[in-house]
Amino acid sequence: MSSPQIDADLPPHYNDFETELPLKFRVGNEDVSPLVTITAAQAHLHLLAAFDKLKRDVYSAHSSLSDEETSEIPSDPHRAWVVFVNRAVYRFDQFMSGKWTSDFPNWSEAAIPPLDVIMVWHTYLLNPRTYYEDSIRRTTPFARRLAAMGSMPLTLIASLVDPTTLEVALPSAHREAFFESTSGLPFMYSLKTTYSDVVSLQCPCCNTINPAVRWITREGDEEGKGTGFAEPDFVHQCDWCSRKFNRSMMGVKKFCEELTRRRARRKVFFAETLLDPMTGKADEMLAEMLTLRLVRRINAVFKLEKKSCGQDEIIQEAINLAKGLDWSPQELYVLIHQGLRPREKHHVYDEQLPRVKRIVAAYSLPGYASIDLVAAILRQGSFIEKMRELGWLESSCFQSPRDQATLLRAIARYHAFLDLMVSKPGSFLVPTIDIVSHGQVANHDIFNLSFL
Image (cartoon, rainbow, N blue to C red; front, side, top):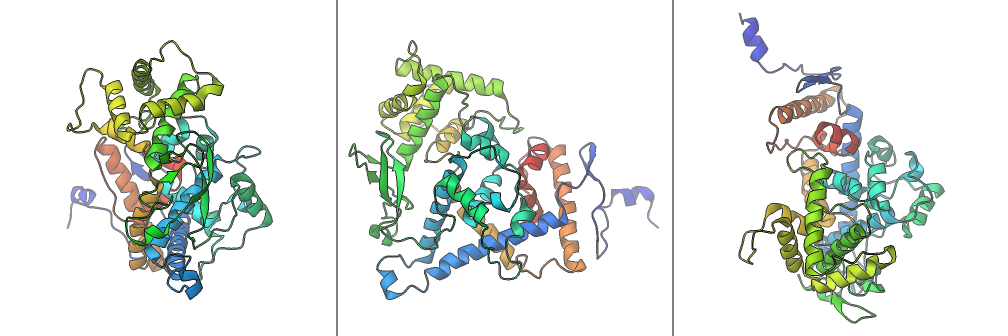
């Protein structure tokens, strides 16, 4: 017969068919209500299944091209998916930075963007520190909308996807109009991209709009040769100034524009400076110190100490600063290093400082996010594939009491993981593949409370 002390030290016993969650879980020194519900976990799985089908639809569309289409559309399905993801990230940027007539509306069907944009938003939320910092370090429309959309309505979104076929419901007129008026783009995305499809981009050298930048080029048919905006070696010659520019040059100009907005007395903290690396909490005193160091160094190098920047001079001064850096990420690294560590000389063979490396990486690409969302989505694809291989994305999965018990146990393990994180602050802990941890990350508001 076991003693009470031995029983207390044993892990909790689970019945074969758990039917409901406990009212409270112990996390640290507090008893908290469940942060994830069985309904939310099921809805998240359903959404992941829709993303998986979207990818398979893109692959399928390029596996059965007609002879006529073959001359205008690449036939490589993997390449087509990478291009599709690039276009989805662009559509997300346009939606989040576009003109909204008022604050973000209450969640309803009319406010839900298309599935490709949801996929990008979902992946962004899976990087909560970057998402959180990007939502508070500036006061731009993009940042305000990140904050307003910090909680993904999983159940509402899942209800718009057929549970059996995973086909997305046709949008209402209000939903379609809201997205199109906000982003300036069609609600319906295209699974295929032709060699003649184009996108409008601002030249980082002269700020002129280039309205006909190709997404893909025929040179991209050879791996690593493409120079379209959705290809690895993107480069475009500006229609106006004739200078060739690429993604990293656009990223350097993004940094310079944030700097000049700061000099124009706008609220701006640079990426990777506002959150404490250990706790994830916002630390404006630290961010202010780091930002002032960078601004002082740049003022000294470009002799800007006695010159203020007017609101109408922001763009031109940003271009001038980027030109002074030769639009080079390497030059930007040296400048940031000198600003944050003024007493240390930096040589090209020195190991890069972690924080400086993270800051430069945040400004290595165009777009408003401080993370490479394309790469993040492609990485997330491997996780979704594992879910499919486990059978967790099947519509019939987790419907019976036996199957739902698996989710209930995963939710319990998730709260145990939270308790472990509280007991080991500063440790780098990675949860298992349990969908529940990803399910909560999609609810950014709750994630801030429990993790950040």
